[in-house]
Length: 547
Ligand code: G6Q
Image 1 (cartoon, rainbow, N blue to C red):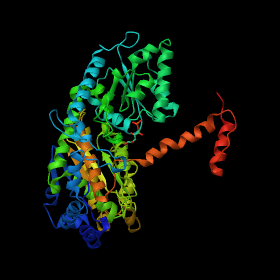
Image 2 (image 1 turned 180 degrees about the vertical axis):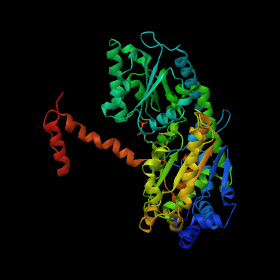
Image 3 (image 1 turned 90 degrees about the vertical axis):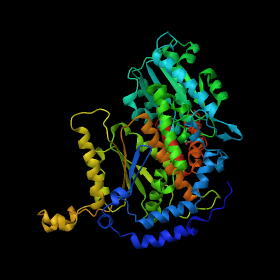
Image 4 (image 1 turned 60 degrees about the vertical axis):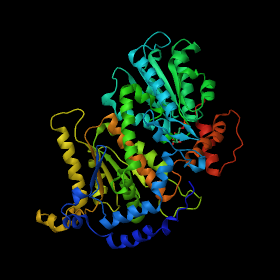
């Protein structure tokens, strides 16, 4: 993509937004709602079964117009088209960014270097489906002839967070006779706790690693190999029945000892944090079955198509992305809280942390110059209503502005007495209270003594989005994840950054390598670090119990 885009702060819409912000920054949501009785309905939009109520945001029609103008001036449309055309928009790694191809229907055509990648995507999906059917039916036998009853995914970062989030989110649809575990941390406690009650003869390990070199994953994979071999009498032939790999690197998979017939491939145009729809989702497919997984992909695809084709003023990811920019760059909001009122989405905020912060936590633009404004805010959150009894205090009455996304579903997956109505009432009550608060007059009218009034006042004017869908299904989950993926894309386009590299993570992958021999070797090493690091290493060497 060669289009030259003006520096962000020089774009006319940016300048206009700065001036506009001065005018509207103190405007209260009470006023905005009082002067427009239809605001709630007017600023609610629905697409592919997902409803976004963004009326409780501190925006006027002029704000929205200027934000949309900013999207145009930032060539968002051209950036979207470039991604879907398979252009190498991940410039620093010279790669296409085609997670959208992973959920394209059979028969679609998306080219990378002149080659249509959709047929290979479906070939791998078919291979995954065949494998999953064999595991789920019990046709696939372990080394001693027993069916698989436990599946352990070993991976980290993008090769873990998507699988674990999706498994938890879709547990309701999962095959309950198989136990699923996820090991990511190089801390041995993770592996030991995940396997302590499992029988190796009934356990399948999925080694998930795009590069098949990641220290944590390879260390855990080696421990898994030893655990299986010890448990099954040391016959190396057991590996073939108890290990499969998901990777882009067949040679490294083979070198580890896994037959490439048991490898599920993906490609360098799939970023780690965007890889849930690739073979990295193998554990998800094992849990919910091939049909469930295809429904998940279909949900993603519907949101992809909405993002690609809908006018920006009705485009859910674009609207959410722009509102995020408004708070982060004009109001100086440093964080965003994501609050799913759905227990199954308990790992969704953690998943979003990687998606948003690894993608847009960047300090330079595509041309290598410093960005002129804050980029990715810090994402965090917990399922409602638990958060209400802890950190919501700060959101309601603290000194920071924290825009919140509330996520809720009309139908309960496990209807139980009054639970779901009570849960939903909390969603509505919280967003109402955050927006409108409670004035000193209202507090006084309740008979509160004067000295206590300030403590009981709620300023309100705390912005929220409410995202509503009918029911948490595989399809809905796909739509929800794609909504955030494309919101991140929108913001990256406006900030003109590369949302698809992760040099900060790459650094972490090499840093420890230098110190490992210094802590492991018998002979006292020559340490060339700073005095703090040298002394920490020496203390550790002195104190550790040598095994
Ligand atoms: C994601 C990142 C990172 C990556 C992990 C695991 O976008 O690149 O989180 O997924 O570092 O990498 P491997 O899959 O190569 O083991």
